[in-house]
Length: 179
Image 1: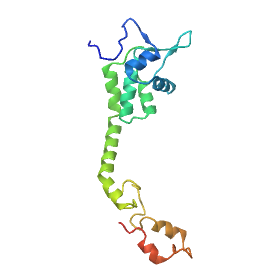
Image 2: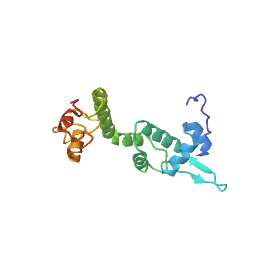
Image 3: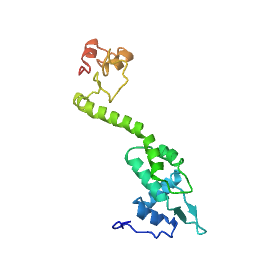
Image 4: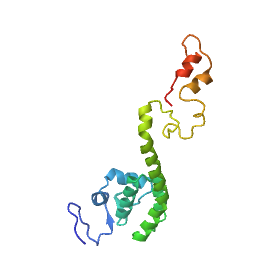
């Protein structure tokens, strides 16, 4: 196995890592490791001096957590997945494959949502009021869009207000006509 430049190597005879060693090897900050532990993503034992010791498989678990976070998987979902892994051995490629395949449909759905956002973003930004018939950003489940747009619905519900012109039917007609 080749040595990675700048990454401290830990002898194989050492079966537990300090928090500093785990941080150096995983690339995660010590505070992130403490956070992961508080959320149940990794675990440690305490020495008689109350120092944390992590088993070597924590390296793969941290790598898995960080990779899952990068693609937007929530920590609660990551924790549930990690709870399915064996505690007594380092997870295998098959273990990781099984877990990552379970997220494929969720990631595909997110990709579709992001594609829709990208495709409609220009229309919504150029409009300014975010009340286009096709606006999937401001109100994708709009049930009033066929009848009214923008602030007209608010004026209709609030009734006539004398003195400020807001109740004027002519003003209602011209409010947010960007459809």
